[in-house]
Image (tube, protein in one colour):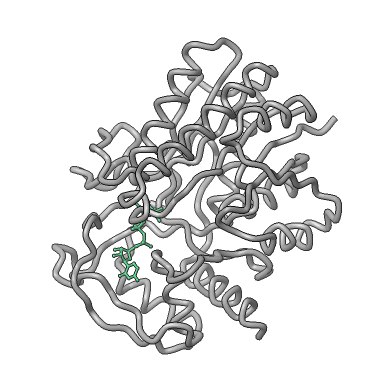
Length: 341
Ligand code: UFG
């Protein structure tokens, strides 16, 4: 019998790409989402890409303990991949209670129901934000976590700790936290991608919306950082590459290959790219000239961060493969698809 994965928050940007890769790797997937920050566009896209017209979808809120419990009663679930959560850094500063309540409560409910139903495998979507401004680059999983600068970042740290402690306490439970660097791009089919509501916070959606004419001009936040060209450096990881890492992590859990019951992996390319270099790569990849200007630094941004992905390369057998130009061309194809072009 095929193993069944529960993908919480599976209608969103990362969740939909992971769902595609899980199905293509031969798993059954149950997608659950409360659609609070997305619509069914990506879920429909997943069905098209995979040809699974009957892909199961449950609209539900993991903050509701009874609903979560019912989901586990109604379905056999072999592993959970938990994405459900709010993710806007700025909003989390303005509405901390909303962020703590949503991001912690949903995860606590998932862990509680999973263990009560004998589902021992939990994969948590963490973030490089837990490292703050790192002392050493590239950053390894051993680097100390810095005090979070936003409630959002704090929920990532707290969820990591909740998973670590739960795994220690409850036998039969094991967990993996994947720390994503900067996920960008879209599926090559252009059927799923990022769908920000309102003005995008993140760089690549802002770039593609500027290129298509939805925004006048990209502001590059800061060109006076102590970096080679003065703009911030990040580790931009292709969303499909990132999604594939989940398949390797799930396999490691299901095949009992974990060395410890709780493991952490950086999911990044290991290659720094500056904001300006990314803009240039976009222009090269698409032939579109981008209107941009330099603007003051954005509060809270770290100067530079990129991954040491050696542990994931070695232990998961996973490696980022896609060239940034291909990633950005895919993001552009997705933006044009949304515009009906
Ligand atoms: N940037 C711009 N202009 C924009 C948007 C972003 O210059 O319009 C710059 C930022 O200043 C930063 C870089 O592009 O230097 C990347 O910014 P993003 O917002 O795309 O990504 P971040 O590195 O800020 O965010 C990542 C994750 C978040 C996570 C955050 C925590 O995408 O989920 O790290 O630091 F919360």
